[in-house]
Image (cartoon, rainbow over all chains, first blue to last red; front, side):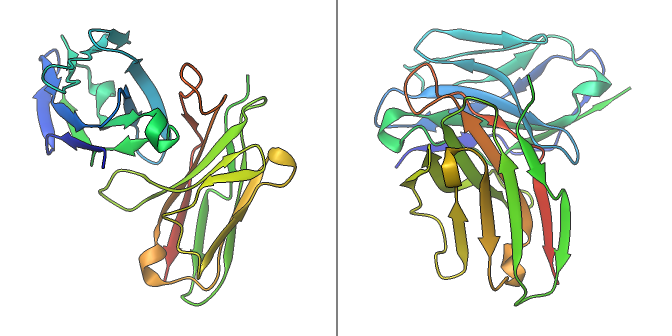
Length: 113
Length: 116
């Protein structure tokens, strides 16, 4: 079945450092790919998405490119802030699974001042 | 536009008791999802509704969990009787529909359940 694998955390960075969180997926169809962010005590917020190969999703300085050839959707940000500290989830959905979201296990990011 | 609403935000019960969670999706969203998020893990789908019909409940422990979506709007998820392993955050999400271009899901704040 479909699955998502994320790099394990926690990832600890200093403010203004470059961020990469790796995400790879396995899917039988042509999924849409998502990054969600979860701040402490809150629900999931959609950060960005891409619906087809080579699409780049971007929001709030974060970006990720849908790479079909490497089945990857890595999250990047050029300069992180303390306020970016949260748990980040990579997820996919596709028609074969009635568009339910299949999530990775999450990566905790801690940004130090 | 109002987001997905859930209540209560927190609930503490003893094992073998019953509990119910409520969700009101974004107005106009036909598809509603309930996910269970155990600490340190990604959310996992429990049940998916399209209007008031069930699309997928294959991962719902039907001996103790039940859910309904009367009139195709708000939804209730119930656990009876609760077990210790049901301690988790229960997330409700909604989307316009289960079709390409409408599948983006928006989540509520979740209900954090602790079973003692």
